[in-house]
Image (cartoon, rainbow, N blue to C red):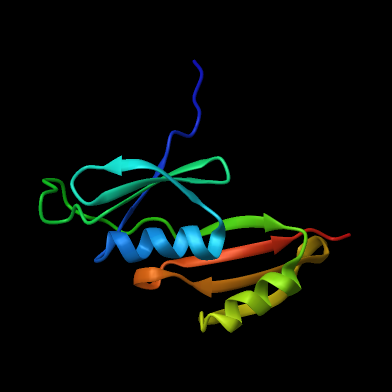
Amino acid sequence: MTLKLNHLHLKTRDPEQTAKFYVDVLGASIVGQAGSGGYRLDLHGLALNVTDFLASQKREQKYGMEHIAIDTDELDAIVEKLKARGIRILEQTTVSGGRRVCFFEGPDGVQLEFIEMKR
């Protein structure tokens, strides 16, 4: 049996603004529509669906994803860009193995993380 990741689905109050954030801040590209008013993005190889499908969903919503992590080799430069855009930095630290990380807040409070591996 072969399994592979297909996509990540983010539900948001404002799909257009959320898609714009992922494009402008994280370098995603819009590759299509997801339903009525939603977007399909390519986030550096990760398929990301951004919709507001809450009212139409029949199954109960549960707690889920904690954050999205993205590798970088230029953490300091990216953090400066986030700050220049007024994006809320949640935490910057060095973790096991000497990796430097920065957690920040995206649309609807979704947490994102940039990771710079030890050089």
